[in-house]
Length: 152
Image 1: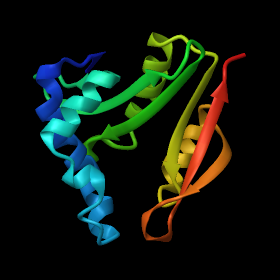
Image 2 (image 1 turned 135 degrees about the vertical axis):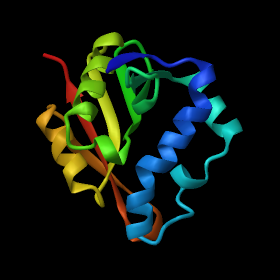
Image 3 (image 1 turned 60 degrees about the vertical axis):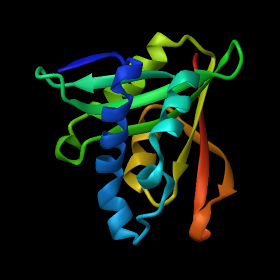
């Protein structure tokens, strides 16, 4: 497996991965119209251009994980859309992707949104040193946890 920068040509595969990665939870929550499930190619291309995206690929080139980030200012990194294919979850891939992107994008502060509906993901972020600093209401009476981590 290799972690590398994604290219614009990877966007269709990343969009398929996004749907596969979020599908089990969307089915469980009866939320098949959630944005990760219905985002179109044009939107995904626009987001790709605004972010640095890395991918985790198998030896045959199949993308099984990804994360993106952008610098909000010279010191602040915003991380988003961490995803790992369901067949490859709980193997440390999400942690490796997070750490690699934070290494590639020097920053003093990193922050992200986490859904209260994903306690395992929140615990992973906490293990990486992220702490909740605020909350925002989400769709369907959910809460988004805003989490941050400062470099020492």
